[in-house]
Length: 203
Length: 203
Length: 203
Image (cartoon, rainbow over all chains, first blue to last red; front, side):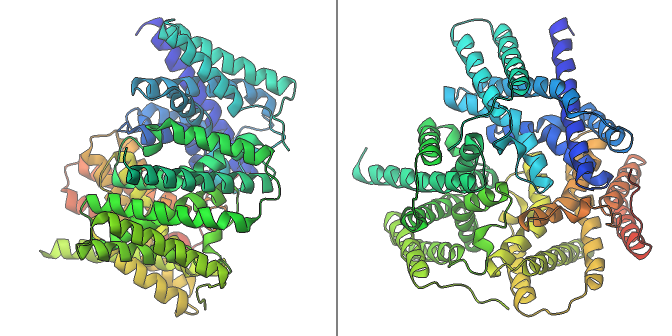
């Protein structure tokens, strides 16, 4: 394993952890028991990638072949549900933004390998990045937070970042550099949007 | 491209457009932002066909290989969300009924190609026709309108029409004629049901 | 067909019937019409197995190739919706617990055939056993009952039973005996949990 692989693995676990924490917290907020917390944590962490794999026909689904992702999600959800107290939403923003960037670019990369058109590649990136959170909110019986008018830019950051990634690849910048650039753009845009409360215009 | 292909394409875009408008309007009604409107529009337009492709194992999913469907949905959702005002539900009934008929018969046709039993073919038709609307309502956190007691016949029209399509094919009427007959029956039944407020009996 | 096959078929239909009844009753409770009742019954009966087949890449999905499952679900849902009155939740507990056990072990068996790791096999068992009920509640626009704090152990029974099944198989007990043991453990645990109102601890 070289350094890049190590970094990718680190990012994957950071992203999955942030999703699992957000799922377990949301479950607790809705008075669920630990089964609810575990399910919502799994769905938040794996939902976007599962949707991506199903749509692209990638079999078996990614989390079936790496049990450590499930073990981590399991452990984090249990600790979050029973022990974590007063974790501020603010603290979660950073790993969550990292996860959004990382998952979106990963989704776009897989779509690119299948030779799909550019818009579809960008959409698959966004779907991978945001669908976990959408399914989390559906299971909690609320309107997905990413759809709400007062939510700071979220899917939008993923959309912009995947396009930058795509253009860099088309410009023959190496895929590795393009990936990091895309991930960082999404990460930075999201933090910027949260900091300055940027939302989309509505009628 | 001959005339029939042209007509099929026209119908596809009409059906997708009607679904996208209905999705974007529903999103606006639930105070979503444009991300919500786009997602709900996509899910309404592509949800039934995606479910069909996943269940039948048709890879890649239909909308991944024709980006113009996504471009159309994208554009229509944006215009609907920001500009369209006072579009009456009534006006939408006609393209929506067309979409119901067209999508249902398309779903049944694909299922037929896989040599499934007749009931399953009919069910796949109905699933293709109605699941987009069901997923739209799930994302908007409401009970699917097609399940409600005061909703005029909807899935029922699709069910009857797909059976007529199936029987015509079994009677060796050409598949093209059978398709048009099925689509028109569903279209006409749905308009009839709306006009005369036909609902299903309940206990 | 020998006796074991006959018993498996009997169990399948019992499990599907219990799910279909629970789906149709839930739909009626939420003021749906028969289309709602049928859809919710199908989703409750087939949702877990469909999720399993999609995740494992088993194509075609199980209920597409045995129309009698659909016919049974259809018939049971219609009778439940229009005729069944005052069926106590208590009466449903027994076939439902049987279904939970049977579906979970079946899911774990299929996952085992794909040589996945033990935790993933257990998870696939639980998903197969409980996801039908989760999707039922999502369609009815409520928080899934299996996530609620006052719900007696449900997914937990499936989780314990699939692990027992897995260990017995690893101990070279025949798969048939292991299956029955796992199914019975889940069945008994669930009835025990309902009888003594066992719930999971929460913070």
